[in-house]
Length: 336
Image 1: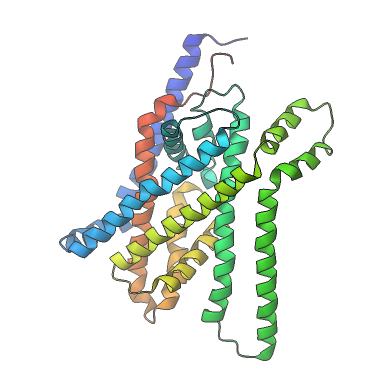
Image 2 (image 1 turned 120 degrees about the horizontal axis):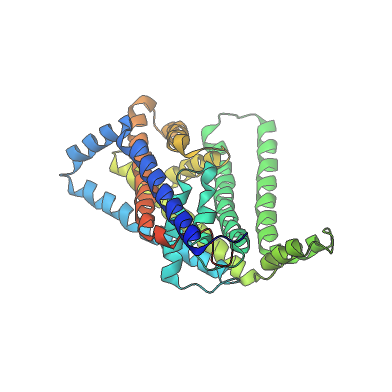
């Protein structure tokens, strides 16, 4: 039985209101009801008179639109295989996806938040391409994380025995080989997907259609997407470093980058829900970044402040902007 246009419209409006309410509620609970934010705001008020402090916070803020702007361009490249999207519309869809991601496990709502702003007759094809973009960002985290692990082991382990040198050499070769295989696997995904066709029953037409969507993506496009993901990683890692120095943590960028990469590497491996995500990020960041400093208890608060502020800049602000475009979010279409 086909739903009437009025029922569809009412359902979509109700869902938009629910998304907006949950996003506002989450940001309020995570930020304004957090004791960490209260102390952070007090610290900012004390230091705001310092020009260097204001300049660094401003620099981190200005990198935010560049960060998500690259993500929008990356998504535009991928989603273009099922629907041509203008860059401005891609930005709006990405921001809407951030709003949806806040209150879903491992931010899976971001995929649907983007795709259901489009006019696709089969949104699942768009979801698959969006997941492909997410995998490219995950690869960037894994690549930088594994390479940083090699430097981390040499710097923060005290083993001097000869056997450890051989073990380390084996780890280096394994990590480098794994990185190369990961990149090759990602870039050759369309060719690999052709082989998947043979494993699925010929009568399963819909599944073959979904595989064909991924198979149609050119390797040149996948290479661009991967390079954009690596660029994004460098941008938000630089943001994190800027904010660490903003809160008086004197650490050279190469050392900070290794520890920041280890933080993202470990956080990626931990399944989370939004309500505890910031707490986990802060705990892992304190564990790794404090290793550089002799007095770990002294720097823990500053690391937590930097972690909280980068979350506000890179997720809370864009999520609030995304709510401005929530009216484009439509789950039940006219033809449904």
